[in-house]
Image (cartoon, rainbow, N blue to C red):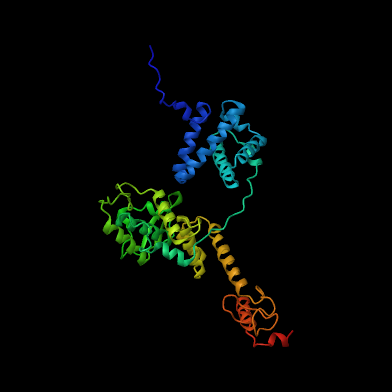
Length: 374
């Protein structure tokens, strides 16, 4: 007599993506190619595989078990119906773009393996998505978050507070991603005397980033307090039990700082990286150099920070321009009707005119010259 199945037993086949054996084998080969040949980030590979699984589940519910010939014979209306269904479920345009990118990647793999071309994917356009500008922090807020004395939770162990301060200092001081900071090995610890560190970014690309003295001091303070022996080949930053530090812990630490400092929800760990780039650009940093520091494969990715800086410049210009803000007539005693006031400096029309000249590159004129030349 066969023993009864345990209620907690999991059907292994239920965890596999829908499809026949050939399709599942192709998916395994595609995943290995993404990770090993194209060297995509693990999160990207996982997202692509998840999107393909969802598409296969959708097809299985409408056309039976998916097969490779069935995918080759797809029609554009099949893909558009899937996108419409996902949109109805509340999936945003960016997620739909990634979904199409994953499906196209799998289609290219099938074509490379000699199965044929999925022509339908070429007839479907990606949804248009407005590119959102990064939201960097003000300089004072970014510096406050990296300051060792700004730690809202005094109940935690001092070495844990020092660890969080060191990680946050690397995010803003060197422009690292969380994965890059937590991927540093103990042997590569940027301590005083080391002015650069090599990090592994997306796609396994290695780049050198500068280490400021304040960042090196924060890392040294963490190492001096850390109670766990660090393996030189192991991670530099560890958790309370000595294992690799989770990115969620860093996110929680930043959220606590955000509440203590009264910062908006946009003050995330990645916002510190945005702040690094934006503040460099505001200090006349070269765009190509910032691209290399951030590890961007394309300069167009880095150029988005020029839009952020231009938006801030225009905001300051509108605040300072004599005709940007006008007070009601006779709003102040002794001020002539129609005379403008600079909101930042409190100066009159002539000082505001000088600001406009400086902003537009016009030669400085003496007060009253504009009336004589009118």
